[in-house]
Image 1 (cartoon, rainbow, N blue to C red):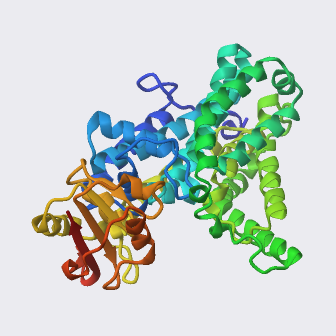
Image 2: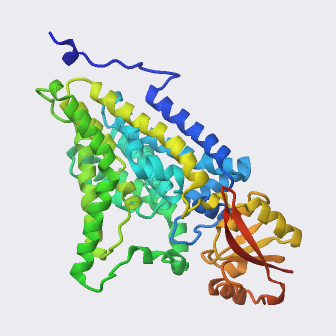
Length: 495
């Protein structure tokens, strides 16, 4: 008898009341929040945008971005203050809840605990989650986390089938959409896939779905009305999709689909490659007679296929030629979960799951030092904007006079200024109703040429404020880790 082929690998069942993999995720992201805060000089582009926007509450914030991440950051700042640590607590807290929701959803769908643990850890193998979400992203983190919440709530609803679970499902669907608009792809995928499973179709076609729909509509209505009233803000960045870029109907769609397959490959290759290597390495432990798949297992596998098909159709319908890998996050984030299930189904022991989890943990550990180098030094041609000497610039500008509002061409400088004075109001070209938010004394600040860019002067004109050209001051803002590289900055204070 070959014990290596018949006995499963044993895991500690619980540590501090939870699966060891879940405990690792919580400890890892808690450490990352503290570590990134410790090595950071200032906020990067996305975090600085959050700092600029959390000075006020609204149903939307412009820049074609939904409000959930900003709401959460605003709440965190009210509770524990405005700081770099607050920003990291929000981001890594959301990431931790994303991982935990994937684990919980898989368990509620009926998958074994070790499959759920391996599927959760496999998220580290998705570059846009294990790397880019830690390095820079904000709204994409909220969107994917919202999708993970919806996945968890869906799994519970299919098991509970109560009015409460239906309401929670509706709430999480709204949260996903308010996190990132492309989460709608996942929500559509979730519903379509569930309709292919008889047990789930019964629940979705019951009266409980009226509760789900009512809660979703109630939560989305205020932001929906805001979007209708601020259409320019909603479509401000729509050009990034490059819809109809060539002017040829068929060529646009061919380019878009080619790009879709390319980014899908880049998004999934690490997880698929590692799972494939492990699958081959355990070929002598093949499961000779896999048991029939339960509804939850069939649902998990179909989610990936249906999700890709939904995006495929979306590209064909819109003619978008620029498809980015992070836009696939809400659709393919459950790919590692599906891979973990396949390893479990077609291999005799849990050893393959153990190896998949260990590989994921190794990648997570490698990310930490590489991330530190990237955030500190970047590259010679692209130093990190978080390393600009914001403290020295703030001191210099504050010495020139008092100001309560900062108007700038981009949010990164005024956003970072709020780390030193959270009472500052920030206005930039993507701020909705920008002119009405200006309160004097006003600091006008911009990069580049001696005169402010048109998008800044337009806001000043709308606010009936004249720029005193003779009072414009100029300075240079250096990178702390690249002292030979400096950015010209111009500013003027208007009383």
